Length: 359
Ligand code: NAD
Image 1 (cartoon, rainbow, N blue to C red):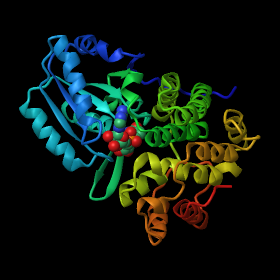
Image 2 (image 1 turned 90 degrees about the horizontal axis):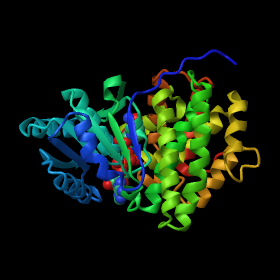
Image 3 (image 1 turned 120 degrees about the horizontal axis):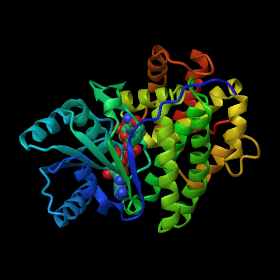
Image 4 (image 1 turned 180 degrees about the vertical axis):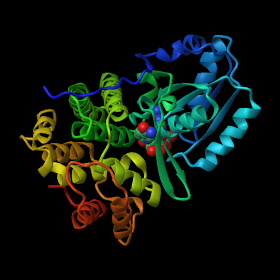
């Protein structure tokens, strides 16, 4: 076995149906008593905030406030606004409930204030498992990593995900798969993250089509949440490469939606890297049903079953943005198993833009 280094990110996980009811104990465990609740703007945000406030009220904990303001890609302008409210409300810990956008705002506030952070994720983004914060300022996404960004406690309660629409389940689940895929060929890949990645992909590749077939299938939703947790651990412990960098460029510079972009780009990014990673491709194929030994085919089969959009142009990306995205992507240096060749990267982005199948 090759030698390797593996850093375990020290966060606490409470997993299981109805575990939202353990929140009051988790707040006390962190020696806090006056949490501020963060939710996303619109959709499920307000109902999640009310749900949490009720759980806290039953335990005689009064929230310092509820902020329904998180939006995608963590714009610093929103964080500044939230910080202002937080300071005027005398909170002693942060609770984020929602998808990666809310978790992102929680991280941005926690790193700025030093307050403890409890997350209740309701999508499969995996952000809650990482010490990484991506923030958008003036149309550019800047990412930083700091152990203090990692949330202190994560409560995975499947019941909070039951309202997640099937299309978001699918794209968010493939976003999670992307974390695991890139960890397999990360420059710091190791047997532990490989194991987590393959189990995560296998679990999600089984659970997501089951959710599409029957959105009320609670056991499939719980499996998907478990798989997403494992994939999130991979994201938090591995150096991401081409796929994530491209998605950051596309999301931050062209305002494309996060999980949908990951879903469209993943087969193309993997196809670009495939010649440099034959062993990883074989392992990945072994956990993707219908792959017949070909991981790209396995992903195509999965995306077909999920019925998700395959074209970035469906989300408003213009054809002329293909060249701009290529320039930005080529300007960022990072480790990738295959050298970045401009023509190949442009073709990858063009195919993803047009919605052509990866091969
Ligand atoms: P999101 O948080 O914006 O959620 C997507 C949509 O789903 C929103 O409209 C939201 O209101 C809705 N939603 C969430 N939970 C719901 C529920 N239970 N029922 C009904 N609707 C629900 O999107 P996301 O894909 O979860 O996260 C994307 C963000 O997270 C991006 O900003 C991305 O950069 C960030 N992210 C960061 C990391 C990291 O490690 N730093 C990792 C992954 C994602």
